[in-house]
Amino acid sequence: MPSLVLSAWSAISPYGVGNEPLRQGLAEGRDALVPLDREQYEAPFARAGLVPGFTAAEYVGKKGTRTMDRVTALAVTAVGGLVGVVAEELAERPEQTALVLGTGSGSVQSIMDFTKDSLTGERPYHVEAARFPNTVMNRAAGQSAIWHHIKGPNTTVAGGSLTGLLALSYALRLHRGGHCGRVLCGAAEEFSTQRAWLEWHGRAEEERETPLGEGAAVFLVEPAEEAAAAGRTALARVAGVRFRAYRTPDGAREALTTCVRETLEAAGTSPAGVRFVAPLGGGGKRAAEEEQAVTDALPGARPEWLRLRGLLGDTSAAATALQLAAVLAAAGERGLGPGEAALVTGVEQDGQVGCAVFTGA
Image 1 (cartoon, rainbow, N blue to C red):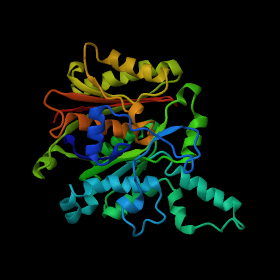
Image 2 (image 1 turned 180 degrees about the horizontal axis):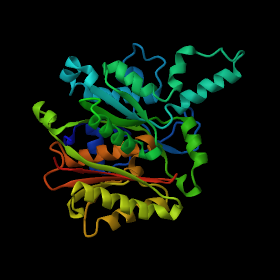
Image 3 (image 1 turned 30 degrees about the horizontal axis):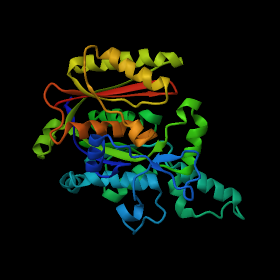
């Protein structure tokens, strides 16, 4: 099978729209959390990681975006950051470019607002029909493909905080199955009052201190030889993506340790070569177990830890995609070097762990 690499990326984060704000914000270690405007958000959190000044009209355009929800606008904008990179391929064979986009539940705000209108209106059918498409999970992926004329396979993946890694795993299988020539792969998440309350009630007490965040990150995944032929730099080789389950709360550490070790071994990568580690993090014990699991799997290694959760907030479905974006931001324009590796990890509270290993191409 051909070696698949990441040759371009596009990010939107609480630092701003584009790769450079994320790169600069992480380099400075700057907190991107801001106080919530109580007139706009009646949420239980005092602060949040919001993309500053972001609106669909401003970044996608005024035409055709009146009913576009926030997560769709974030996704369309992030995908748009890569369209120029593959403009020639899209013009010649648009059906050979696939899009795999991760999401939480689509737009929780759109789903709940539409349901509320059907219950409180004079008639259940007195709802704005133009907003109904926002209530389906694949709205963001579908609109991104339509907006940017991407005609290959279009897939939506949802899997909690591990969504970004699950989307990447699906993208690899999609390409290796011969269904496309390249994949735009990533994840997006929006902040809303509705999501804030659902998260608040679904969290353990010790995890309610972490504010929510939003953002998106999308990557171009393609064979190394095609990237070279197009003059694109192979920033990192996708060496492996793997997941495991655990049945008891105290089983997460062992499960992730095994997951990381097996992925490194299958990739032929030495633990000592891991330059960056981007953990998901979480509330209290879960974050400590995740980092201890990585330490157990990398004996003697001294990687640079990229901890985003305290800077951007809990970005949920976009979290592991933004962790990967942080790795590429830290690696610089030339990407990971020969003999270098990076590790992205996550522990989901519903009983799943996952990791991805990337190496210098």
